Length: 131
Image 1 (cartoon, rainbow, N blue to C red):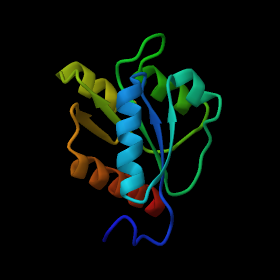
Image 2 (cartoon, rainbow, N blue to C red; image 1 turned 60 degrees about the horizontal axis):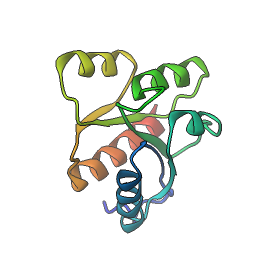
Image 3 (cartoon, helix red, strand yellow; image 1 turned 90 degrees about the vertical axis):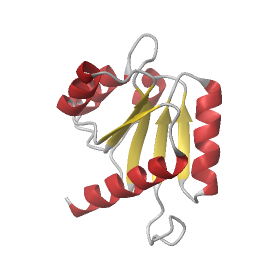
């Protein structure tokens, strides 16, 4: 099924401190017909974060002040249950295990393959809707 053909509009919150990454991911979402909102820090995302249907969070693991794993923990504390896809240049067993422990649904290594990312978004949103 194409992303444009889905009956419900998908929404992705992009959380990454790198401006070029945010812009690139936003362009990819737009080209796939997915609505997105980009945030330059976990703090700015937390100020607006809320549960919503047909949505997920795409976040970098390594950011200053608060990393993506800490953001996942804060979201859980606040009862925000949106599925999370983590992306990172760091790819080690400890980081992957911590991400799993915090409920991250997918972990992708940068640079991210566009189609793999779009497939992951579609899958986590569909699985979340079934739950």
